[in-house]
Amino acid sequence: DAKTTQPNSMESNEEEPVHLPCNHSTISGTDYIHWYRQLPSQGPEYVIHGLTSNVNNRMASLAIAEDRKSSTLILHRATLRDAAVYYCIPSHSGTYKYIFGTGTRLKVLA
Amino acid sequence: GAGVSQTPSNKVTEKGKYVELRCDPISGHTALYWYRQSLGQGPEFLIYFQGTGAADDSGLPNDRFFAVRPEGSVSTLKIQRTERGDSAVYLCASSLGDRGTEAFFGQGTRLTVV
Image (tube, rainbow over all chains, first blue to last red; front, side, top):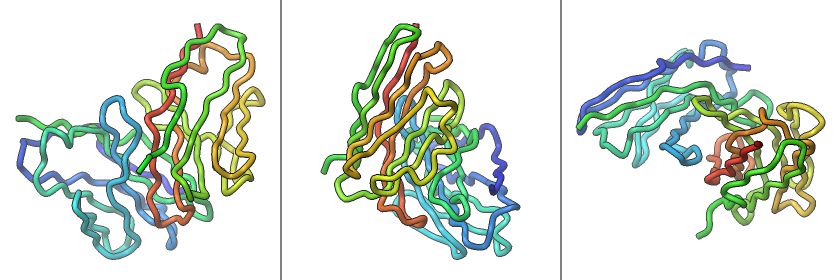
């Protein structure tokens, strides 16, 4: 299983960019990198995923290192509604299940 | 359109009782997952269905836990002889079943064993 390392917590000011790092040095060549977030008292919510190239969607951008051993989730302008726990999840090689770690708790300051 | 629906939203049961938790996935999603989440922890994988069959049940903690998906749609997680340590939020998710697609999670069932 690919192991991930994320900071326990981060803070950001509202309307500033946020870069959430994740190390996944044991990822296999065919594993996607998924990011989910979990707002208080809700189930996890998909944010973005990628394989090798950087990815953008309406919620965020995902920057994947060339060696794929790390990735960074970028929120371009943090809002108070982005306060959540963010999970980086390599898709488990050979299967479809998601293995969640403890994630990064993002606090957004007004 | 409807998302993943879980019922009940809350369940309080006495130690030793049997409980069933229901998950209605998004229509057409072949993959279905069960997780449980304790306070302050990330979701913990329990079981994954592809269609009607359990493709991976390696996360079920012991034989008191069992899950079914008889027609490839609705799933039921069954817990026998509940223990106080089973208290958690039980989350269900569904997806199209490809590793590159997103999973949609329900709001969860909060189980409290007293």
